[in-house]
Length: 280
Image (tube, rainbow, N blue to C red; front, side, top):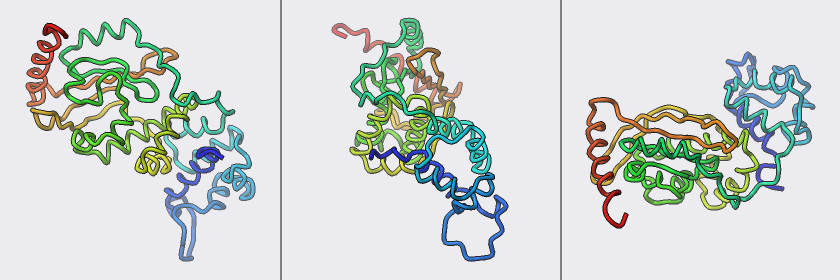
């Protein structure tokens, strides 16, 4: 049995443990010894028999109907990303995982041209496994993880530089795993092998993956410790590139007129000169 054979039941169990029983309308005057909702409480709130819900959570029914999934999502107060993930778990099994050996589809020429035009900003493209497939020279200068050929997940959990580069490493590591789970909602065949490898290589990754948190951050702010510069606070936007490749473009930028703005301009000028030096 693989680590995710019971993924549907594990996800449901993790979500019901986060629901406050009283706020869900459960009246219980006894001393509760469990976190969140009991299995039978969730079943009744969703309009299911406790025995049938037990079958789902125990992995004996892995493909419940749309109506049942909607009822469970409602009681568990799942957001859109969590609902999508729940649906993916109840679908038919995907094609066999590639175990991370299949080559990533190349970045489209038009996207590469855009990256050349954005030399003054840290920008890069990743695949579903978070492999960095292309990026600006400034991206690699700001963060070694953003260099072509690196993997953002491996860097975060396996590279000792990560805790220095990311002053807020705990939050970033949690977000990285939750985002990877969100991607797994639609690309399980590509990610199952990679996730299995990471679970073996990092206890921290395994613990965060097994917490079953799932959400995506498509915009936000990140603090980075940059060599020779100090801490830069940069905003970012993530753009899913239309197509079967599953590529995502990340673009980082400073607030206009901020110290980060001035610092990035200086870094970009030096990086551009360096990249055009003879022998480069």
